[in-house]
Image (cartoon, rainbow, N blue to C red; front, side, top):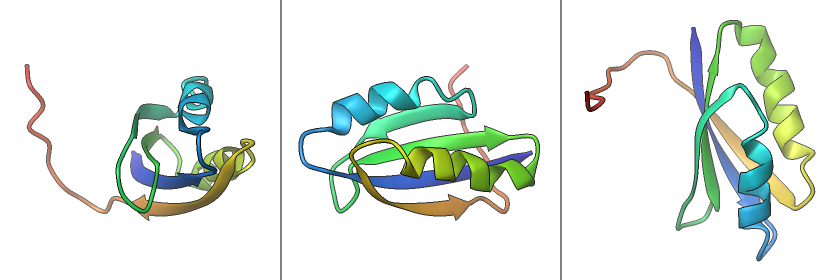
Length: 82
């Protein structure tokens, strides 16, 4: 299992449209518009690490995306509400 977070910088005013387009990516588990240097954060969940490059490349090709920063998770924990 591969988990990665992609920070996405967009052109001004297109955050909502980009977020909507990210919904069609089955590999993206969650995505949010955020404050700060980046405009959107997306959580990617994959079975195969070799697919990460392909997914990030698809994100970078969305019209209005200026840049991305990918952070791949090595290990961690989660306290999800049940």
